[in-house]
Length: 167
Image: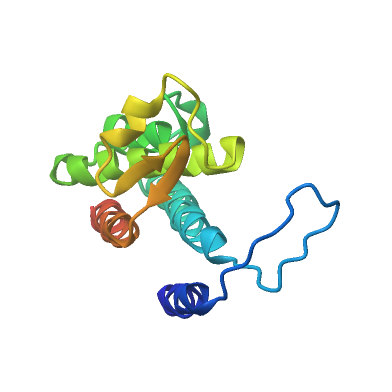
C-alpha cells in the first residue's frame, strides 16, 4: 500500500492545475486523485487485523484454560478494551509490557471510527482529542494521517498480538 501511495502521490504532484466550474452538475476534471482513500484504508485494515486475531487469541485462551466465559461476555469501554480485559482479568495474562501499544491501538480505533462514521471529519469540540495523537493532524475538521502513524500502528499491532499469543 505504501508503494501505491507513493506512486499516486507522485501522479498528484504531476497532475495539471485546472480551474473548474464547481456549479456544474458533472465534473469537467481531466484528472481524479484517489490518494486520500489509501491511508484511511490502511488504518482500517490494521484495525481489522487486530480485531480478528485478538478474538482468535481469546478463543484459544478460553479453550486452553477451560473457561466458561467468552470475550463476548466481557464489557469494556469499547470492543478493544473488552478483548484486553478478557485476556488480562479472565485468562490472567500479564500484558503490562504492551500497555503503550494498547493505548496506541485505542487511538487507532478512534481515528478509524472517525473515518468510518464521520467521513474523516472531526466534530466541532472534539478536535483536541485527535490533536494529541502522534501522527495525526487536522486540516480544518479533516483528519490528516502521517505515514509514521501507520508504521507505528503496524508495530504496536505486532507487539500486542505477539504478547497475547506467546503468553
